[in-house]
Length: 210
Image (cartoon, rainbow, N blue to C red; front, side, top):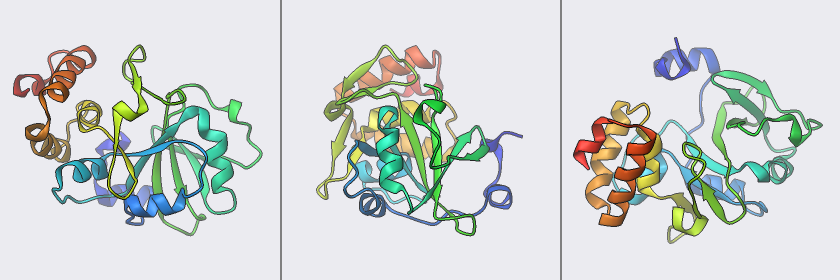
């Protein structure tokens, strides 16, 4: 059974619990961090729509090239674990950044082994000042065009991009986010999602609803 197929109870039994956090908590943790970061996942959906939903964790993204800055910022505060499709391994303080392949994607953070997990971090192949579509690497946008900033200064991934990444699995919560987000998209956002989804997931069921 794949990691994504586990029930919440089975997941917790295998990997441990998660601490509920908010984007504001992430902003406090990353205050002073020298790299770029932005919120993805369910919190990005809620921030755009204003529709409350349940959250298992806070998903944030950083630039793959900022991994060294990220590790330095969190040194002595959290343990960073590499997640390779459910296989977890600690990233040690003396591990060089070039140990990790370019497609290295996901990290989980926690204070120590006796503590619950706190943050789910995606390492995007973004370039300085730009967002790169990891599902279509030829597609790049200025980071300011691929994200938006709320009144509190927290940056979120654009809703149309969020839905592109939710489309691959389209779990019930992703379907709910699609239903809440799409009516709020402008024509440019809807067209981008429709065109890009057709390239990344040809024949996807959402295309008919766009």
